[in-house]
Image (cartoon, rainbow, N blue to C red; front, side, top):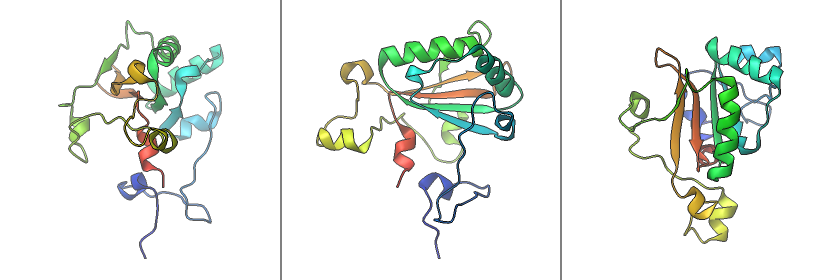
Length: 173
């Protein structure tokens, strides 16, 4: 029988741990939790309102520089971008770790699928409210989706940022 798992899990080459209902297990891990260092990949959503304490800044920096990867998604508009970018600048100073828009010819966009655009995906309730005519949750202030990254000196992506889109929402059932 084919396991009805979320779309992302279907494309992974690694084993995924499932709960008794057949859903992938997930954990909420705080930046200061030692368990963070057992997670090669962490996701944060709606980071446009985030405020990091000093100890969280230090731990997140340590995690990322030791090989961890952070993906932030589902934050919309200029105010959310400004809040997030000021907080991540405390973790990874922009003079050494600038934020860049990842060009569509980057190998990441061809690693598993050929990606030719950064799609703007909204949550289903918003999409239904507007009859499918709009995907920009903040109107003109969020009408362009971005895929931005922070890399180390060797080009390894430390942080991926999908702004003005909710990529993860497309993986939900």
